[in-house]
Amino acid sequence: MIYNLRFTRYDIRIRAMAKRVVFISFLLAMILVSSSAAKAQRILGAVSVGVNCTQVDGDEFFGYHKFGLNVGPMVAVPFGKNKKWSVSMELLYSQKGSYHRGSTDSTTFRLVQDYAEIPILVHFTDKKLISGGVGFSYGRLINYKETKNSFYDSIFHYQTPLSNNDISVIADLQVRIWSKLWVNLRYQYSVKSNRTVLVTDPSTYPRTSYTRKQYNNVITLRLTWVFNQEKINKRAK
Image 1 (cartoon, rainbow, N blue to C red):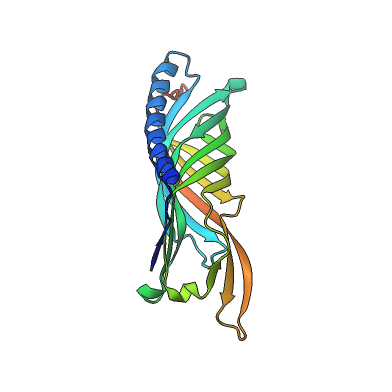
Image 2 (cartoon, rainbow, N blue to C red; image 1 turned 60 degrees about the horizontal axis):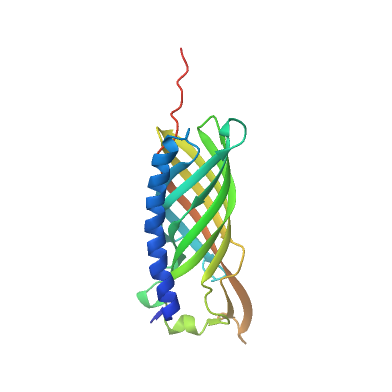
């Protein structure tokens, strides 16, 4: 049985708006790239593409078995002495959720959550080669699908609907691997519960129940290309 989020007209407008914002933000990033080249590179423009490895803490399944896209533009403003510090903002299409492969198709559980996400981070970059950052992100749910059978209906009793908003904290590590190309490893965790579920343990008699709150738990690996970044000066031999 497949459960879909039923969108109101307002949610449909939000989803359409998110697509427009992604497109407009990408255009703005391109404009900023062009203009900042003439302004001593005060603003950096970039685009990232990669994969999310996700799980949902509180759903009784363990492991980062759900994979999804993480893609979108970014702008960053360097500041401080030698411009080693920077603040960045991104607009991402980010797929999260949970996946459990059962012994048969009827015992497989899948939760798909698609978000329009805005991360804001502060970075420190050393020698223009390695960068570490921390920050937070706001995500708006734009699509949702949950696949499960009646067995899971007898175990999971949702006390609250899935939240349309996801607020999370981020730890970020980037390493420059070639020219303007960076590899990026990111960890992200929800600080606000996405929903509450009453779990019934089928292995006990009489059956016992307990309440769990669910949180998105995400590891992201991606590549980032910075369009107008300064080249590294080669040291003379």
